[in-house]
Every structure is written in structure tokens, then in C-alpha cells.
Amino acid sequence: MKFFVDTADVAEIRSLVGTGFLDGVTTNPSLIAKSGRKMSEVIAEICALTDGPVSAEVTATDHETMLKEGRYLRGIASNVCVKVPLTEAGLRTCKVLSEEGTPVNVTLCFSANQALLAAKAGATFISPFVGRLDDIGQDGMGLIADVVQIYKNYAFKTEVLVASIRHPVHVLQSAKLGAHVGTMPPAVIRGLMKHPLTDRGLEAFLADWAKTGQSIL
Image (cartoon, rainbow, N blue to C red; front, side, top):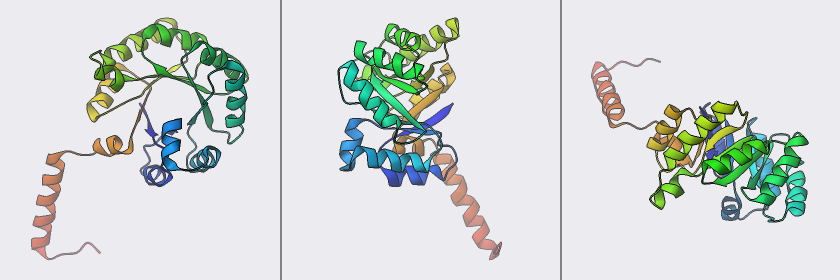
């Protein structure tokens, strides 16, 4: 399973790149707005930090303008993946960009039928939002199971990119279901490393070692 970080914080991305388990980055207009910087500058800087795909989202709602924005974003760096919303205009834009060789991430997916349409439009990634479905009492992980199964049934090349991940359990469940990618905030990625028994074990080892009075170096 590939790990993408969902942020536009360049310092956070730089820190996580050094871990070796970061495979890409996703951003959106809200995350870019929080940075207080020009979108093109932020995307270019992020793309320089990683060889993986960096999702940069269009802000237009009509097909023609989406297409222009998508082509502009793709020109920022070779690893830009254009993100479009799951609307009719977004799917039309996805089809054109995909046929031009541009990777496309179709976002704001909340149903398996929507995911099926995105795959047929040639999406590189589909982004089902599990946390937002959970928030309204629906089964976010059930959607992931459905989409993974449908894509397997028809050998679609579109990768399931689980979005709106809120906690490590979402990551575990996604991996067990066979999702290709999970995108999550930096805090969730770091949370995957945490376990109280790891902390206690390390404390005990260090305490025992200190009693010996030795130094490895």
C-alpha cells in the first residue's frame, strides 16, 4: 500500500520524505489556502521534494476552464497529478487529460457508482472519502470494499486512493481490503509508528544499558 501525505506544509513534507515511506502528496484548495502562498509556487516546491505524484486540484467548475487549469497545473512539474471533482464536468476533463497522458485524481467520491464512472473516464486515482461518510453515519470502509471489488471484477487500472483518513484504524482497514493508496495528514502517518509497548520496551532497554556504564562509540 502506498502512503501519500495530505498537506501543503512544505516543512512537514520535507520531514516525511526522509523516512523513506512517503510515496506521494495530495493537496487541495483548502490546504493551499492555509499555506498563505501562491498555488503554483507551493506545488513546484512540493514536486521538487518527491518523485511521487503530487495532486494539484483545479478550482473551476466548468469543463473548459477545468481543462485549461489542468493543463496549466500539469506544466508546473512532470510529477503533477491533476485533481478534478467527481462531477460531469470533472469526468469530461478527466477523460481528455487522461487521453493526453496526464495523470488524474478524481476526488470527492462518495459512492461505488461514482467510482465506476471515474474508472471508465480513465482516472489514474479515485479518492473515496471515508471519514466524511463516517461523519454522517454511513460506512466509509464499506465503500472501499465495494470499489476494490468492482475494480478487480473488470481489471480497471484506476487505483483506489483512500482519502479523508482520520486515524490509524482507517489505514489498517484500507490495507486489509486491498486499497492501493492511503492519503492522510502528517499526524496520522506518525501515529502509525506509535504503540505504548514500544515506548515502554525502549525505556527498559535504555535503563538497563545505562546501568552498565558502557558506550557503543
